[in-house]
Image (cartoon, rainbow over all chains, first blue to last red; front, side, top):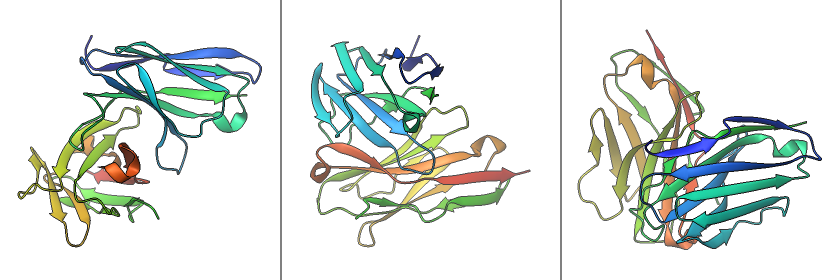
Length: 115
Length: 115
């Protein structure tokens, strides 16, 4: 498998559920990202990991918890979400996130609906 | 202030014609990178083209070219010989060091190619 993969592609959960989103990159990159895409809003950066270390937490509520066990895998753990958290969650990876030429490659996203 | 402004929420183009999608940006950095991504209805963000602030030539990638006007802070995407498969959302993004090494996206332009 090549590129960036995300599972599941679709997720419906209640506000009291706990679920996890998974991202895997097969590009040999060292930086990984979580973005949130809501309707009619620009992509919002949530978290950044460089070489497995979290380097950015963009004021994300604690009900979103990232985990990066190695440079190829990134998880987003979800618990007690709100309906306004319904969105497309995109994962991306790049070589090292340190240079203006560093291109980010995205996965297909997880469409999350919170009931 | 928004880092990226895309003033065209929607654009239509006849198949086989060329179309220009506008993007203006705001940065105080001298070194930065500009990116264009395509997002079909499937959700995945597909990297199209990159322009570095110090690049003297306008970037080209197949049918995509970037009309980079540094003094005007604009980086318009030109798609030549439009195809039906070009119908999608198109996002302009900037990476600059003033933004804490993050990629900032515009709100996008929805392009519809008419047969």
